[in-house]
Amino acid sequence: MIDVLIAVTTLGIAAEESNPKLCDPNKYVSQIEPDMQYTEEEFNYENYRWAMDWFRKADWKTRVEGKTYERPFELGWEFEMMYFNRLTAIEGYVLKQRALASEGETREVAVDRFCKFMISAVPLD
Image (cartoon, rainbow, N blue to C red; front, side, top):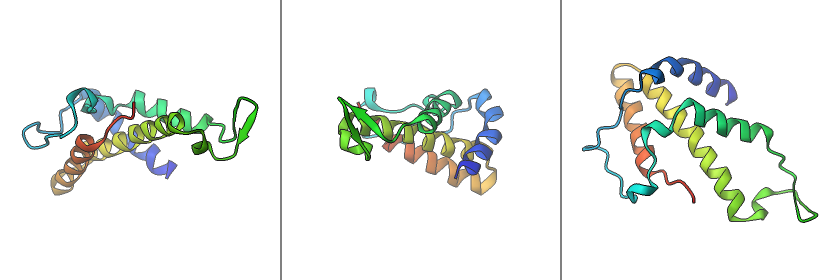
């Protein structure tokens, strides 16, 4: 999976720099409150790197108040928010890069997949 992420990242950096809008706001309408929606711009290389770095550096044996947790999800909602928000940043970035790198009918499918993901993704807060 890491190889796929690196390949997609390499293909998409140049396309992202031009920052084209992929999702037609008339076609892709979110039911999520506007202040809780992701924007296309948030699925960028900087946020992707931030999320990947967190996963690479994560100490999955977590110590809290002197107790060691083998399963970080035992820590509750705070860890879950960090985990899922970073996972969303990675998935959204990969989908966006696929859409930017695709052509023809494949591009239409990739753009649709990214836009549907974007309007349904909710940052956990």
